[in-house]
Length: 393
Image 1 (cartoon, rainbow, N blue to C red):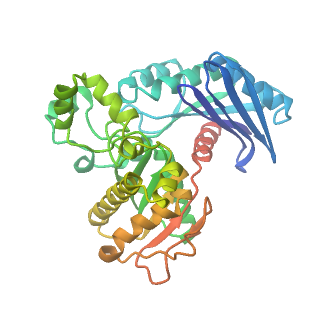
Image 2 (image 1 turned 120 degrees about the horizontal axis):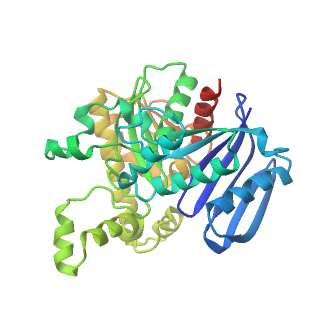
């Protein structure tokens, strides 16, 4: 069975085509700058990378181009070979406790949650509609970032705000990156042949979150009602005192909407460093001695170490710390800064030589470390494909 796993953004479309149940990737790609005349589509087939520069006015056109290219480059012979489509959806709220077979009502339910993920859910729905139009006979499954976190209990997901806010409006922590946290947790269980573990997964990319996993279930996570909560990210602030918004509004005359936009798009690495939202630029400046770059990575490392320490206490111990996603998998510097902050209290130590790797699955803790530290490259697409395959049987 051939399944395409899709991650639709507001101006992008990422995908993988997999043969199931072998989980063999036979094609992958990304369309960027959808809605522009200078859109870029990069397709990877076997060892070949093909780049198309073209005008792509909307997601419907992007899907059209993607599927046609899969035929042109012999990934599939016809559209009918794609029997299942898995769609990443960021926010499932309290409506979706598991992945869902998509029909018109499911789409309406996803759209009803748009306020909880305004930068993500609307784009996810656009992708769903585009693929359903071209592949009407395939099964379509919505796979939610929040599903893995539905095991979190009230003491961890509730805010100390008026309880009516939760009852009437669903104000609570939902989390994100659930498919990634689940994949990494399951991979550690496979490596160790043990499901009774206490793990902290550090999904650190331009968007970033941590997850405390006990016995393969999420028990707490750093992102909250929206992806703005938690640790600093590429352009997101992470946690701040909410009174800052009132203070800045009075000083600069900003509206609340403008303030939130700044916290989402002009803060984090970008705001603190004044250099870039890209961690590679920050690391280059850090190594050159730039004080704000040094401050930026130290703030990030401190916040991540804080969460790991709190999860150690909450779970009553810790077996493994796992780094994943773009920065987590590739930044030896940030991994080192984080673990050094934990060494004294938790007895966790890095093997500095083993840590000098990028994007490989490897144990990087020293032999005398009290907690194992792994790099585990994430694979959200295979998690999506597995859910689609389950619905197909």
